[in-house]
Image 1 (cartoon, rainbow, N blue to C red):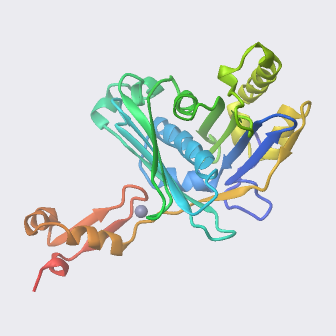
Image 2 (image 1 turned 60 degrees about the vertical axis):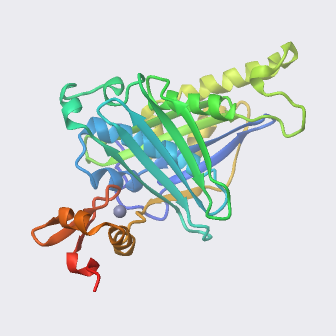
Image 3 (image 1 turned 180 degrees about the horizontal axis):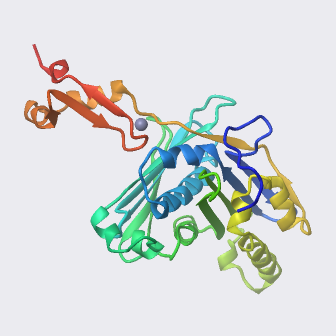
Length: 322
Ligand SMILES: [Zn+2]
């Protein structure tokens, strides 16, 4: 990590919690850079995770921000990983409220199997936490009742979350993608920071244009340019993705100034949970009398939101039918 002071609150000039879309000049290569400061720190600190677990969830939140910010309309993008490792489930979602100027709402949590986690010692590897033997990653886009729900699912192939994401784009959307995710705790301040970069080779807009993977010899030039761009993208160090003193624009310039890079308006991300007393009340209202009795401890029903760790306390009387 750098010696620069860590941004704790987000002052006006802060470029944290920002997703910056970009395009390589003259190519159909588009990407985004994301940098998370307080947004990721708040989410991770709401839970009592070990550093290794927090790091994975942090990367997952970066991925969710990259994908969520691509949605142009009101809606919710949810990403879920189910695994046979010490983290049976990772969930994060990104809500575009559809209100102009409002940041995207990000939240997420990891389900931890303490028993399995205990087998891996203090510093469990990705393979121990998530692994690649069994499981899947699912992405759901929900744009409300009138729109169709979209869901894509891929196997958990890869030795890092970045690899799983790359594989997702290749197999589920046939889009060659380079992606790097990173999250770590600043050893001095104890604040979590995270960042990521994604570069995609989009199919040409015109009809009949083949995608990169299916192109014939004549497309070698394009293939070379794409390979070079992925090598540059891959050369980004984790520290650069988290460094608060290096803006996304400066990072992009450093990587792609030879080809030329064009940036577009940034979108912003903030931690916000969608849980509410009303929503949980309605859920409990659907419980049978037996289930309600079972959920009652010391005369109260306490419901914990897994996303933000808030506790909601209800009196069982609230649900008794007259
Ligand atoms: Zn909540």
